[in-house]
Structure formats: structure tokens, C-alpha cells
Image (cartoon, rainbow, N blue to C red; front, side, top):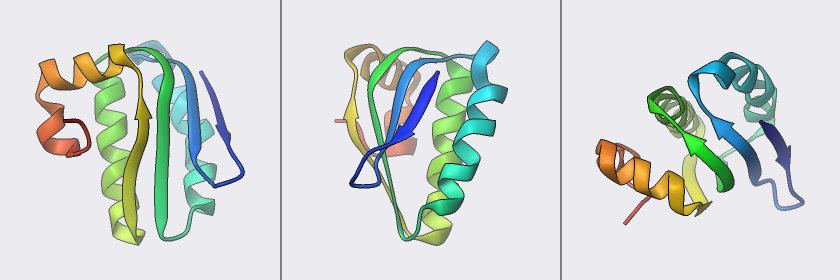
Length: 97
């Protein structure tokens, strides 16, 4: 999983958000979230696979971001959108219609 920040401050995710990667992803994303002030924006258009642990990580990022400001998903891949809708996480994340 690659995680980077673009010029607007959006966190760009590329790769798989799955259980075997979660610890590594968490270690990469935590310092980036610490630098985010007031608004956390995620771009998930480069995510090609996600499982329940990935969905839980997204929810944890959302909850943490909302303590400091706002949270938004800017873009989402078809695969991730499908998994979010099938799992019911669309209600929790309130980002996918």
C-alpha cells in the first residue's frame, strides 16, 4: 500500500486495504493524520481491494478526524464502493451514495 499527500493535502491511497497490510498501513497513515489540521480528505480511487479490516481502518480514521475537524472521501474505486455498500459501512461512513 502506498500512501501519499498531494498538494491540496488529500491523502492518496494506492493498493490493497486488507488485513495482511493493516498494521503497515496504520504505521504509514498515522504520522500523515497527525499533520492534518481541521480537514481530512481521502482519495481511495487507487484502492484495488478492501476487506472488513480495511473498512474498520477507514472508520477509525473518520472518528479520529472528526475529533479534530472534518472528514471526507474525495474519490473511491468501484471495488471499494461495492464493498462499502455490501457491508453496510455506507451508513457509518456517510460518504458513499
